Length: 75
Image (cartoon, rainbow, N blue to C red; front, side, top):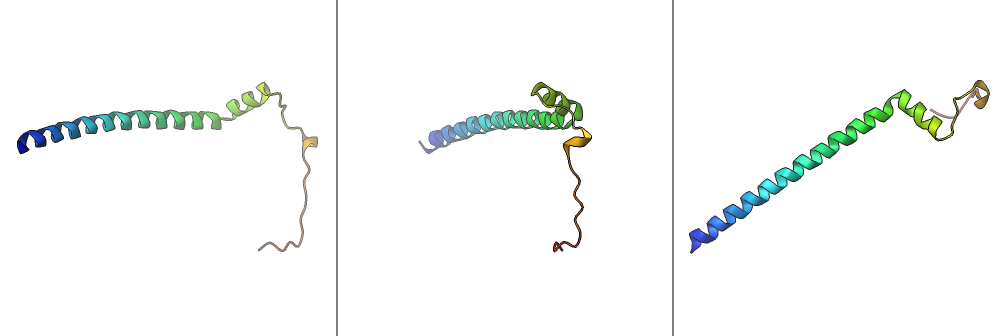
């Protein structure tokens, strides 16, 4: 009786191990896909194209101001 129970437990553990291995592969594939997308969106051409599609325009010299700060309390 004990041998049968032990054999069933070994089979169940084997099935669970296989299922977890498949889940790990799916998660690794998803991680790799997300890393690819992150690196892809870091490219300046992609950022500029996305900005143009959303109605933004390139920065012009008059779009920002430069501030000079003297004698600050920042250490």
